[in-house]
Structure formats: structure tokens, C-alpha cells
Image (cartoon, rainbow, N blue to C red; front, top):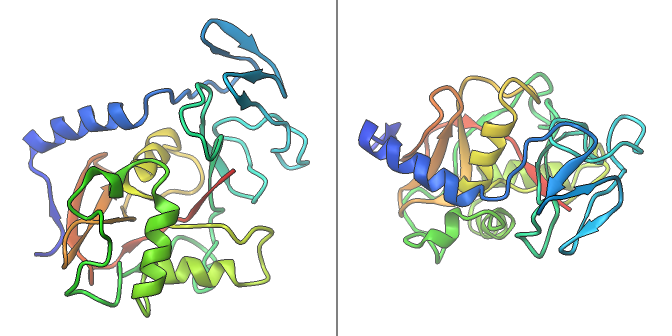
Length: 230
């Protein structure tokens, strides 16, 4: 099983799945956005969500999709409707984040262990949901001696970045990233690994070029782009 992607009928199902995972996603790029009919400006609160002005090159701009985040990457999700209790923003790491590849995203295997399931939620929806990537990544780092999450962990332990909380996105998080940052953040027309495991031998992949999801064997090399939440 190598580079096995979903047939066209499953692509249609994936579109439905995408919609369920990105409810509440707003790609408004203006300074003012709307939540429940109420106009929100900088640092105003709605349903527990607070817009922050700590983004951009100066660290004083409103955080919104497409602008530079506090970690030097690109904001790709804003939880305007306060769906998630543990974060309000998702930020993709800057291009050239990897210590081994300063000109683009590295191509890596999913994990060194290609024969065992390492995530308890492999056969459940949980492994692929938005908000699960950080948990998945911690399991991968613990179980794998090398691979996508281990490279992100090395990045976290380097002294070259401001934050050390980057992780490999879950499939749901990766879908939002590729949908909202088309043509931005240096993403290439390639396939990217998520942190969501498919089986004992496979993981979930997002195709930036074709826009749909599939699975591949863990020893296949695909591009990797970490994210962080705050």
C-alpha cells in the first residue's frame, strides 16, 4: 500500500467531512468581522472569543487569516464563533522551519515504526478532529525514533524559534490549513502528512494539489508543515 488515495466518490464524502470540521471558519481578511450579527473590532469579546492585536511584523496588528502570527508563521484559522475551548487561533510555521531544509518544507516518513498502531483513536473520528494534532504528535514523538513529528520536536528544542509548542496538524487541522492558505505561506503543490494515523501501517495525507485526503504507508515521504495553537 503506497500513495493510495481515495477514489472520486470518496472525494465527495471528504467535502462533506470538510464542512463538518470547519464550521465557524471565517476567511474574512478585513479589520472588522461579524459573529452572530455583531461587529467585532480589535480586542473585543464575543461568546468568550477575544480578538487579539499581537500579529503582523510589528506584533501589534489584528490576528486574522493570512497575516503573520506571533511565531513568525501565518495565521490560518480564527475561532470567531468560539467553538474550541482550548485555543482561538491556529498558526502555520514559517517556510524554512526545518533545521534540515531552510528553503522549503522537508519530505519525511510518518514514523519509523511502520508495523504497529500507536494511536488509540486510529479507528475513530477523534484522531482526525480539529484540536487533536498536539495530542497525536506527542504520541508519535514517544513511539517513533524518527519521522514527521520527531522533526517538529527537534524544531521545538532548537534555539532558533520564539515558541516551542509547534506540532504536526491532525487531518482536520491540515484540511483547514490547505483550504485557507492556498497560495500563501509557501505551501507547495504537494502531499502533506497529518498526525492522524490510519492503521498499523498507514497515516492520513492531505493533497494540496488535488484538495482531497487519502492514506499512505508510513514509510512514504511527504511534505511536513507544523502548526501551533494559542
